[in-house]
Amino acid sequence: MRAHWEHFSHRADMGVRGCSATLAGAFEQAALAMTAIITDPAQVKPAERVDIRCEGGDPELLLVDWLNALVFEMATRKLLFSRFNVTLDDGRLGGIAWGERVDREKHQPAVEVKGATYTALRVNRLPDGAWLAQCVVDV
Image (cartoon, rainbow, N blue to C red; front, side):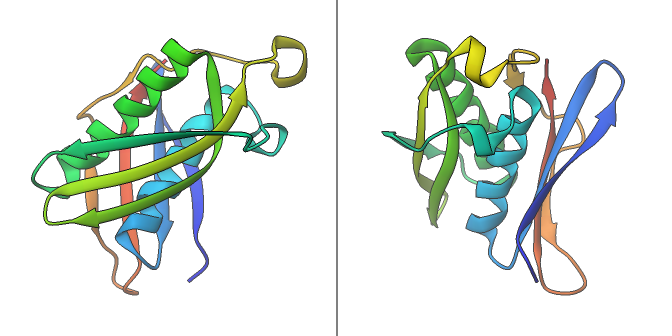
Protein backbone atom coordinates (compact mmCIF):
# COMPACT_ATOMS: atom_id res chain seq x y z
CA MET A 1 0.00 0.00 0.00
CA ARG A 2 1.27 3.41 -0.97
CA ALA A 3 1.16 5.98 1.81
CA HIS A 4 -1.08 8.91 1.05
CA TRP A 5 -3.15 11.68 2.56
CA GLU A 6 -6.51 13.16 1.68
CA HIS A 7 -9.11 15.64 2.85
CA PHE A 8 -12.76 15.07 3.58
CA SER A 9 -15.31 17.83 4.06
CA HIS A 10 -17.09 18.46 7.30
CA ARG A 11 -19.38 21.50 7.41
CA ALA A 12 -17.22 24.62 7.85
CA ASP A 13 -14.16 22.64 8.94
CA MET A 14 -11.92 20.17 7.13
CA GLY A 15 -11.12 16.52 7.71
CA VAL A 16 -7.57 15.21 7.43
CA ARG A 17 -6.86 11.58 6.75
CA GLY A 18 -3.59 9.70 6.54
CA CYS A 19 -3.16 6.14 5.28
CA SER A 20 -0.01 4.05 5.35
CA ALA A 21 1.31 0.55 5.86
CA THR A 22 2.31 1.55 9.41
CA LEU A 23 0.51 3.44 12.17
CA ALA A 24 3.38 5.92 12.42
CA GLY A 25 3.19 6.47 8.67
CA ALA A 26 -0.54 7.20 8.90
CA PHE A 27 0.21 9.87 11.54
CA GLU A 28 2.83 11.40 9.24
CA GLN A 29 0.39 11.45 6.33
CA ALA A 30 -2.35 13.05 8.49
CA ALA A 31 0.13 15.81 9.37
CA LEU A 32 0.91 16.30 5.70
CA ALA A 33 -2.83 16.54 4.97
CA MET A 34 -3.07 19.27 7.61
CA THR A 35 -0.27 21.26 5.94
CA ALA A 36 -2.04 20.83 2.59
CA ILE A 37 -5.07 22.68 3.97
CA ILE A 38 -2.85 25.73 4.41
CA THR A 39 -0.53 25.50 1.39
CA ASP A 40 0.98 23.10 -1.12
CA PRO A 41 3.44 21.00 0.94
CA ALA A 42 5.74 20.78 -2.10
CA GLN A 43 6.36 24.54 -1.70
CA VAL A 44 7.66 24.13 1.88
CA LYS A 45 11.39 23.43 2.22
CA PRO A 46 12.27 21.03 5.07
CA ALA A 47 14.97 23.42 6.33
CA GLU A 48 14.25 23.69 10.08
CA ARG A 49 13.78 20.76 12.48
CA VAL A 50 11.35 20.73 15.40
CA ASP A 51 11.14 17.81 17.88
CA ILE A 52 7.75 16.97 19.33
CA ARG A 53 6.83 14.61 22.17
CA CYS A 54 3.30 13.52 23.10
CA GLU A 55 1.87 11.07 25.60
CA GLY A 56 -1.75 10.18 25.20
CA GLY A 57 -2.47 6.57 25.88
CA ASP A 58 -4.55 5.33 22.98
CA PRO A 59 -3.70 6.06 19.35
CA GLU A 60 -6.74 8.30 18.79
CA LEU A 61 -5.77 10.66 21.61
CA LEU A 62 -2.18 10.61 20.39
CA LEU A 63 -3.28 11.64 16.90
CA VAL A 64 -5.14 14.69 18.24
CA ASP A 65 -2.22 15.58 20.54
CA TRP A 66 0.27 15.22 17.65
CA LEU A 67 -1.70 17.43 15.29
CA ASN A 68 -2.35 20.03 18.01
CA ALA A 69 1.35 20.08 18.90
CA LEU A 70 2.08 20.81 15.23
CA VAL A 71 -0.53 23.61 15.20
CA PHE A 72 1.13 25.09 18.31
CA GLU A 73 4.59 24.95 16.71
CA MET A 74 3.28 26.49 13.47
CA ALA A 75 1.64 29.35 15.37
CA THR A 76 4.45 30.13 17.82
CA ARG A 77 7.40 29.64 15.48
CA LYS A 78 5.63 30.95 12.34
CA LEU A 79 6.55 27.75 10.48
CA LEU A 80 4.95 25.45 7.93
CA PHE A 81 5.98 21.80 7.82
CA SER A 82 6.43 19.48 4.86
CA ARG A 83 8.25 16.43 6.22
CA PHE A 84 7.52 14.32 9.28
CA ASN A 85 8.95 11.35 11.13
CA VAL A 86 6.90 9.66 13.85
CA THR A 87 7.78 6.84 16.22
CA LEU A 88 5.18 5.30 18.50
CA ASP A 89 6.00 3.32 21.61
CA ASP A 90 3.61 2.25 24.37
CA GLY A 91 1.32 5.31 24.33
CA ARG A 92 4.12 7.77 23.56
CA LEU A 93 4.84 9.59 20.35
CA GLY A 94 8.19 10.96 19.30
CA GLY A 95 7.92 13.18 16.28
CA ILE A 96 10.15 15.32 14.13
CA ALA A 97 8.76 17.94 11.80
CA TRP A 98 10.82 19.78 9.20
CA GLY A 99 9.74 23.00 7.57
CA GLU A 100 10.42 26.65 7.00
CA ARG A 101 9.19 30.06 8.10
CA VAL A 102 5.96 31.19 6.49
CA ASP A 103 6.53 33.36 3.45
CA ARG A 104 3.13 34.80 2.48
CA GLU A 105 4.21 35.42 -1.11
CA LYS A 106 5.72 31.97 -1.63
CA HIS A 107 3.28 29.84 0.39
CA GLN A 108 0.09 31.88 -0.11
CA PRO A 109 -1.57 30.40 3.00
CA ALA A 110 -5.26 29.74 2.31
CA VAL A 111 -6.49 29.35 5.89
CA GLU A 112 -5.21 29.02 9.43
CA VAL A 113 -5.67 25.69 11.17
CA LYS A 114 -6.78 26.41 14.75
CA GLY A 115 -6.66 22.88 16.09
CA ALA A 116 -7.46 19.20 15.75
CA THR A 117 -10.77 18.01 17.19
CA TYR A 118 -12.33 14.73 18.30
CA THR A 119 -14.89 14.97 15.50
CA ALA A 120 -14.73 12.00 13.09
CA LEU A 121 -11.68 10.82 15.06
CA ARG A 122 -10.63 7.39 13.93
CA VAL A 123 -7.41 5.41 14.07
CA ASN A 124 -7.67 1.82 12.94
CA ARG A 125 -6.48 -0.90 10.62
CA LEU A 126 -8.25 -1.24 7.30
CA PRO A 127 -9.26 -4.59 5.79
CA ASP A 128 -6.19 -4.52 3.51
CA GLY A 129 -3.91 -4.22 6.57
CA ALA A 130 -3.09 -0.53 6.07
CA TRP A 131 -3.53 2.00 8.87
CA LEU A 132 -5.91 4.96 8.77
CA ALA A 133 -5.63 8.03 11.02
CA GLN A 134 -8.19 10.81 10.67
CA CYS A 135 -9.97 13.66 12.40
CA VAL A 136 -11.53 17.03 11.68
CA VAL A 137 -9.46 20.16 12.15
CA ASP A 138 -10.94 23.54 12.99
CA VAL A 139 -10.10 26.15 10.33
